[in-house]
Length: 132
Image 1 (cartoon, rainbow, N blue to C red):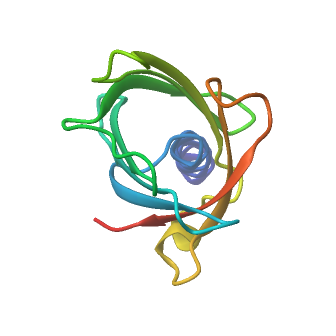
Image 2 (cartoon, one colour):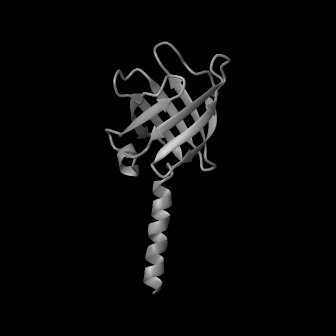
Image 3 (cartoon, helix red, strand yellow):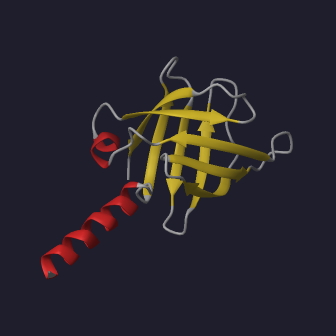
């Protein structure tokens, strides 16, 4: 009986962990051109920091801040507040289905689909890697 309870606890804790991104610093580079480079810092209190550099734009420091949640379909949703007047708020959804701990630590990274409300409803493919 103790083994059954222990294994159920382990399975439930793995499921919860699998539905939350691991704390740390990640890089994300767009798959199509490789010119959009983002840095995402995920914190244990379910907040994150987001910075981005493109050929035409660099997010001013300290970057965008927001609170995130992950739903049952492995979609990380975050409402960001950014330090620029022209774009003070951004909503982002990231499909973490492929972002397993092994994949984000691999040389290839994990392919994720990102939807930004300011760009439109089409997903942009990024390669996500954990760097710290």
